[in-house]
Image 1 (cartoon, rainbow, N blue to C red):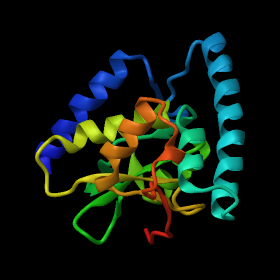
Image 2: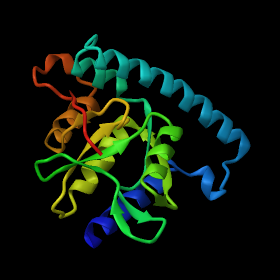
Image 3: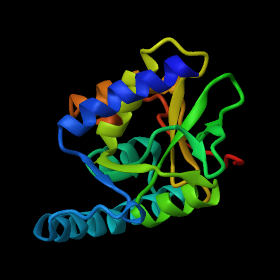
Image 4: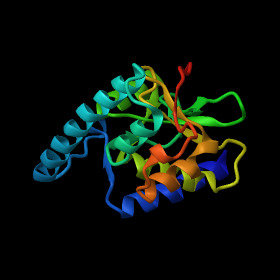
Length: 197
């Protein structure tokens, strides 16, 4: 687990350098007010769009490829998959996939992320913002580090549970990165699978 944590730290340092991180309000660090207001407006707009897409996909009104193409540039919120509980115990904050892999949680709002980490008794976490595609690339980079647990993505666990398995990341990123019309690809790209956590 130590190598895995070191790998995530390296990936997160790259995210910080790109200026995509902000601290949880609970940690008492505020954004510049003008930057914070602009960021929150963008996040609220993305949250509304994301929730609409999640609802449509959940009700089978759009297929997986359409969902992924539309979700590509929307902002999601996440933290590291490893942390400590408030009593100092190391813990993984992810969902086992049942095949030796896991699902890394991303959220459509800071409130949902905080609720998840607070319910898991997580101590002192950092919330980060990136596009959905950027979060996929972050997980893909972390998966390059030797570890017994490769990660996929789960979107808004507890609300939707839409998952992208670790084995799908490379292909989905390739399609979304090239802006290829995912409808030309016959392979399913995402699943609406409830995950217990």
